[in-house]
Length: 158
Image 1 (cartoon, rainbow, N blue to C red):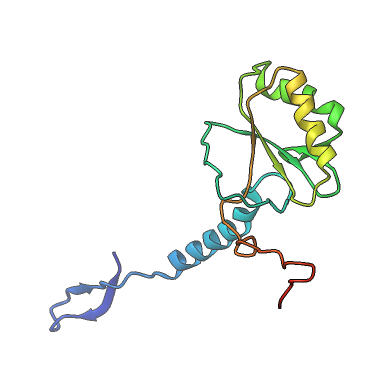
Image 2 (cartoon, rainbow, N blue to C red):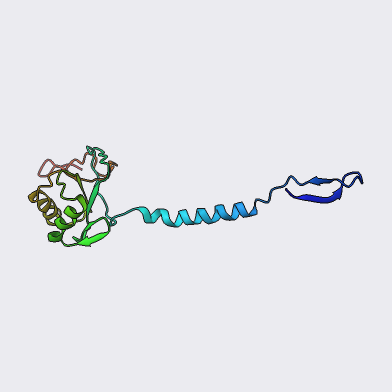
């Protein structure tokens, strides 16, 4: 506790200071804030894909999902590790310890080649991993609302 140099009433007693220096506390908190602001975006694993949207999708919560990502240019990745489709099963079996009952989540970009997605699903299913979930964005787009085709022919009106 800090003491002031001014005596009380000339008796020689010193009065304690009640102020706390908060500058070091503020410095530490700002450093922690900056560290968390930098590291938080890095915690999201996987490749960036633009998920398609589905109205009827259901949320699944496995305890520790295995995510296989397929990008729009056909690249396949498990987490952040990019690989070829034939090498996919070796990596998945290594991650699961041979457990083929684990749920595999496939996050495919909506612009991804259909053949790449089917190739991944075929690779999984042919090796006994049949618990496959296709991940979509839960938001329903407004642009896919009921679109009525214009009538054609003689009776067409505008």
